[in-house]
Length: 410
Ligand SMILES: Cc1cc2nc3c(=O)[nH]c(=O)nc-3n(C[C@H](O)[C@H](O)[C@H](O)COP(=O)(O)OP(=O)(O)OC[C@H]3O[C@@H](n4cnc5c(N)ncnc54)[C@H](O)[C@@H]3O)c2cc1C
Image (tube, rainbow, N blue to C red):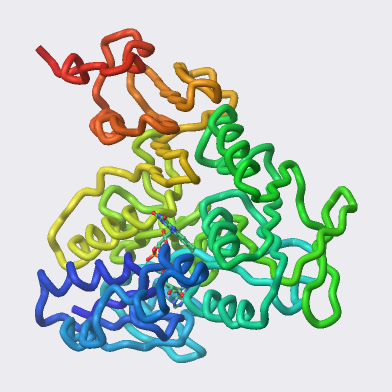
């Protein structure tokens, strides 16, 4: 059996380990664009802020590939999949496979703006990006603009503030983390950021940049010129699947997979940020581009590829983060937009120092936003994942000290 894995991120690596546990004789070939050892992508922001060196990023040792008996082809990008011949294409060369895993992750959403090729404008996805950012910091920039109010934008803004830069965050939506939290929580977060000296401007996008060689200003759609000598773009990601033939493999936003992570082409699997699987909370296909799901999907796909059927229960969006003194946890379908089929109950708010919002559909909990008082988040997650019917009035779950044992049958 010849297994080919595209992508040396956490999904690809976990798949390799699962395959090797089940099949010691099969041939495994890993094709990866990045030439580094597998590393913790979420940790690149710690390198940017200066609290961790690049050397701390790897998540597997230098012996990993030998131990797994993996042939590596690194620094090469797969350009096509020939489904009929069961081959992948790399710079014109072809490589056979019996089982293929697409674990190519995601690429930063390209910024549509003028003069993005000026120096010191960076995306934030890879170790190479952060290495170049750190080099730029050595030249002593003073003012940075961060584009995007999502997780990556946040991490970048924090990191640059820690490095002593004056940071302006430009967010297209009306409040930060709008993909994860509802407006009430978003406004609490915004307030906290402004209080701590981050210049956050909402409802603003960038039209272009000015500079002579290197960036000197970001120009907004309202015509403002914001002086800066460094820019980090964190406006979300798109699944890296440009090499996947849409006529032969079903692709929506990501590569569509079934409950065993197999694509519409038999023997070809997908896992991680590139895969679109069922979202437990939404009950529809979704790309939840988060590390723990990529890890589990990689392992699950590896088992299935090696002949041990393992069902994947579906993915669940979740995030825990601290924003100054605000602890934030989001779960599932946390920010429904004009969805009349859901019921939302809330408690707290800015004056109370905490906020909780729970989203229900058909007597099931499907989402939650917790600002401070996040301690019951684990139980809420279990209610969502296990689809536990809520036989009580939903608002009762928000009562302080609510006894979740009341939801157990009998
Ligand atoms: C700054 C930052 C912070 C983050 N923080 C968090 C966090 O706090 N919590 C969380 O859950 N998630 C976080 N994430 C997201 C998390 O890192 C991803 O969900 C996870 O890395 C996805 O793993 P993956 O294996 O699917 O893809 P990736 O890690 O993207 O790996 C895919 C690999 O495939 C390679 N590749 C792509 N196309 C090709 C091709 N055509 N040929 C060959 N190789 C290819 C890529 O170069 C890459 O090396 C963060 C991400 C970033 C960038």
